[in-house]
Image 1 (cartoon, rainbow, N blue to C red):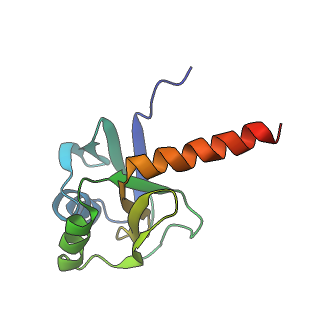
Image 2 (cartoon, one colour; image 1 turned 30 degrees about the vertical axis):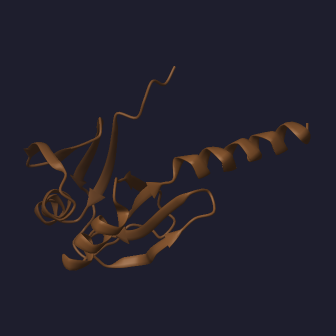
Length: 136
């Protein structure tokens, strides 16, 4: 039985450059670093980096994404913009209660920052669950 997500690992072309991005740009706490792996703490889930891609090679466009839940998405978005992070989808509202923006790491791994209006999220979820029960 699955208990939780333990680690999400990204393949990167330059381990040092990627570690700098996740540590300095995103502000994640580095747990450990080896020549073949760097691990960061992220709310009880480890973000791992492994050098597998060749320099200049990027992640395929339909790769999964990771959403980072933040307390103040406007503030963090502005901080990342000041650090020259390139967003592929600017800050916007979602109908389910999220306010989010999408960007990539130096290798093209898809990352998102999101702040959730929990009341709206639960209301939308409850309506969706109700519709599902009505269609059975």
